[in-house]
Length: 284
Ligand code: GUN
Image (tube, rainbow, N blue to C red; front, side, top):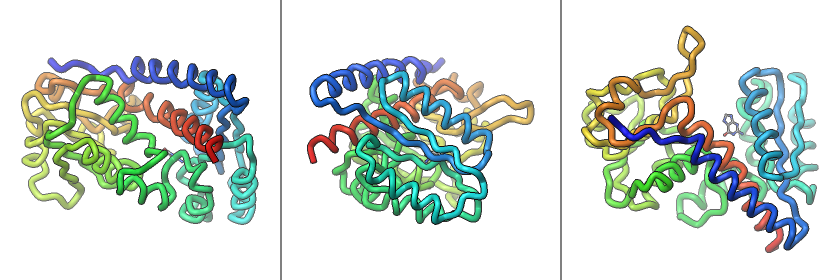
């Protein structure tokens, strides 16, 4: 039976470190890291995320602002808010919760956020920096996965790493971070032939396709590390990952549960990026 990687525990340990570092930063420089979160419209899931982000800021001692804008918000109004936050010295990180309502252009907002305040690491400047391995910010979910591996004592160097999913938010940056850690990386996606066969080669499998319980025991190598990035709702309302925990856990050496694995790490990494942004602002 696999060791369960406890994302809640690891996340709490990192948040305690961020809190300490924040206290030091405030004492030494008078600067308190500040995060602004923007949400447009009434998507209930997004509202929960935004509330959790505010709570996390309070927990680590950050200043935070939340902007809950109506569905009718125009692109010009949203752009004006981003411009104002870009100039605001109290704010070191800006996060605009995605998805946006259909009449708004997500790309325009991503491009407009000052790359130095882009704590999602979605701006092409930050994406480019990740490619060349010279970065301040890491996208929160892949960074959370790397922190889970590191803090569980799992060495990526030389391992066969298979990332299933090629989104800009998870799959692509995840592959890059595993490559920087000297993994041998394969990216799979919906057109991959013989997916099960490729997955069975993985020493480290990262599942990020958004299909409930898709990865089953027969797709896993004995002793593999299995990281489940999925967050899916079952018909009965229960949260479940991309990995069929029951059949995979007996074969894996390590596995992340859903909930309680990668999920808690994402907001913690956002806190880490905001702290980094505040420190970088002092250096400027
Ligand atoms: N919506 C779901 N996840 C995220 C995220 O990591 N960042 C932003 N901005 N929106 C999201």
